[in-house]
Length: 312
Image 1 (cartoon, rainbow, N blue to C red):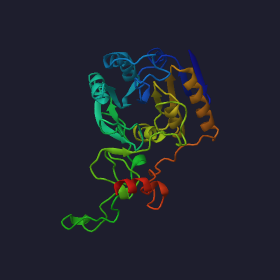
Image 2: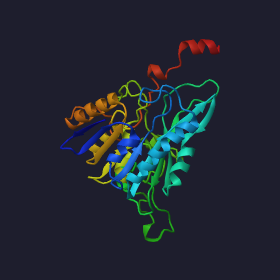
Image 3: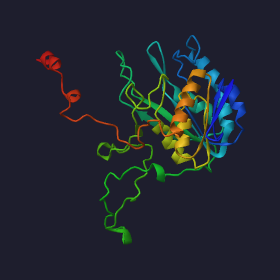
Image 4: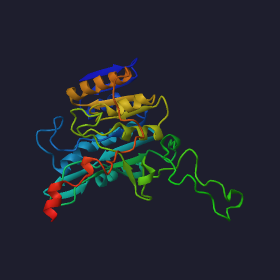
């Protein structure tokens, strides 16, 4: 098992089994533990065969316990998962992890839907285009800072109506932006009030953050949690760090990143990306950049001639 420390030994990348390497992180020292565990799809750093759902949950249970132990009293645990598929049946993994984490005394603060527009296409069901992020706090006295993650007001010119006393006629919104609740978007023209969706692109082939890791989640997903749930100097831990996204997001915002992965290859990639970031050479998708929508005149937005012919 190997350990890499960078930037004056602040950030740590630990290679080895998560259940074992978590012992190297002192209990109660992490303001945020955030991860996206292996999806049980036979990728390189998992087993040669897929686990059954029961085996998958049993394997992760002691790791969840260790992660809970690492969280500070006013800290958070964020667990991002998709679905388990077997013989065409969908098993929502967040259901299982909610039970696993809440029975350890953690309290669910939000169940957030991460929506994306690319992925595998299904033929006998609707194609899946979202995953969930479960945000838990360890106690009722948890740290939360809304300001860094506020979104633009949808109606900035809206004013208080009559009957509001001294506030009548004054702007009703906050000039710093609105509380996104559990719906986050950076394009107010496309906001759909009330939907608990964070509209972030997934890591596809042309994404600037793409590496060889098969299940990489975007830096911005982690950054939002880092900014809202931690302060500068806090420790952020990811027990399945993969390509290093969490440690890089922590470093970007003056937090201390700790990442674990059993794959030596991915630890090497994470180390290289982190060093590139510290040197100012890593390309990341800008924080808060709207998801691009094609303009009506673009070729990709035009109905193909073959489709028009088939419809006639």
